[in-house]
Image 1 (tube, rainbow, N blue to C red):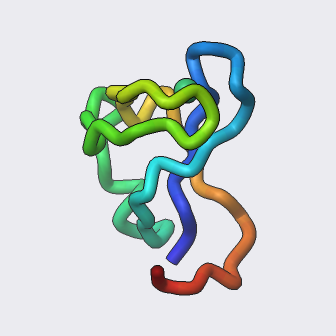
Image 2 (image 1 turned 45 degrees about the vertical axis):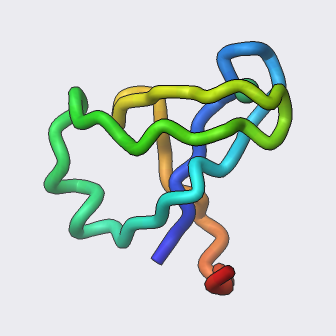
Length: 65
Ligand SMILES: [Zn+2]
């Protein structure tokens, strides 16, 4: 599993969406797929996002909360 990351639209840099996916599942999703809105840890606002905005964090050593 890898974390799904987007760029904060408020200029806060890269933020994890709180969702994770593996590559096969990710690759099956269409670009218009809408992820779960989440509260941005950087700017504090709720961001809605699509797959088009996002990428998978390559870092594999992800631990469950
Ligand atoms: Zn943000």
